[in-house]
Length: 204
Image (cartoon, rainbow, N blue to C red):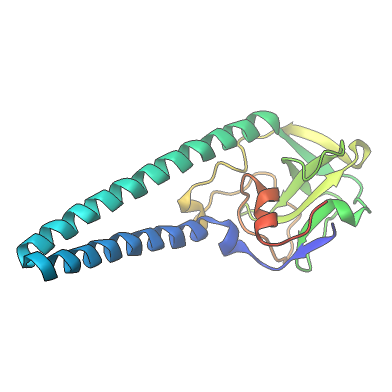
């Protein structure tokens, strides 16, 4: 699974969700207009306006319920990851097994990089870490043997607990990789393995 990805920051960041929100708005407007036109052609302009408004309210309620359900699901997932993966590590030996790592295109893992404990890509007993920039972008995601890393401290916060403000003005990551110019894969997301499968990446 030597998976090097080009910069997918938009795909893995809140920017991706703003596209979904735009599509939801287009959906609400489209249904409202079409229903209003349909009813208006048959029963007059007044009835069409009322029908369009009712349709718009109904669609808005459906979209709101969808966001509430998915938001609850995502929060449960983040809470689970926050509880299970609590540690910061430092790389003392770069892993050689490229089948156990995912990197941004051209990125590398270096001795001295900090790594944030993350959900494993597979059940192989390795410690999976994410190397983050000072702006919380994922540069690499890899499995390490215990002798290849040293535990530093508990996380001051989970890397999964970002919000929309982090797209343009994130706080400083307290334990980043060593400073260098590098591509990244965007903000950390829960369910990274499932995201890769949706992108068509082959995983074991």
